[in-house]
Amino acid sequence: MKKTTLLLSLMLIICGSSSAFAESIYEKPILFRGIEWGTPYNEVVESYENKGETVWKPDGLDADFFNGQAKHYGEVGFAMRSGLPEGETVAGYEVDYYDGVHFNFVYTPDETGRLSEDKDHAVLCFASYMFDFGGKIEEYNAALEDLTNKLTLLYGDIDSEPSAGYGNRAVWKGAEGTLVSLYCNRGSYLNGGYYYRIFIQYSFEGMEDLLQDAKAALDKDFASITDGL
Image: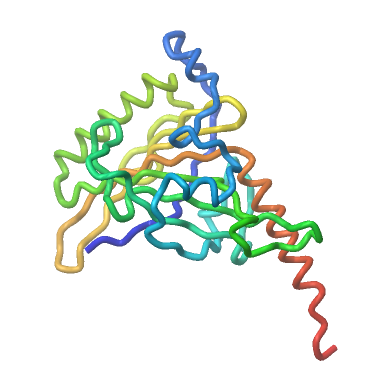
């Protein structure tokens, strides 16, 4: 049984020096498949098949970003599932065709300053790949080492050291407040045994500002409700 995790906590960034070998690449913005952060929803879906959406209501750890305390926002956006074209891989690994790619969009205020729950007012702020290795722990361990090495080759030294066990493992920083992180997850099947997954997550520092703007717009709407007073 698969249970798709749409949102995962991003770890704190601890600045580290990049290797001389990867410095020129490391200093560029890190993007998800070349898509600029803040790209409108309608432009993103031109290239990706929408295979389902879920309301995004970040709270708790899901809303922490760059040491921010953005929590309890209400419904500020939505997450979209997609796959890649059949046969296309990421770093040599297959992602699930149905929901191996996730995009998160946040609604932005309209000209009146209120939150417009309209896809024409939604922009990209977070995206990720998910690799599911089922119960094959040996394949999972080998892929984790391989993907860590490949990300380090591209983006330089890890900005925060991997933690032991499962959860947030490593973060690489790019220019303009961008980042990519490697997240590991172990879950259990209802009938026993474990499954192992790796997530590669992409985002940018401006995500927190977008969430705060959305929260302010929600607060403005809530403050205007005076029925029964």
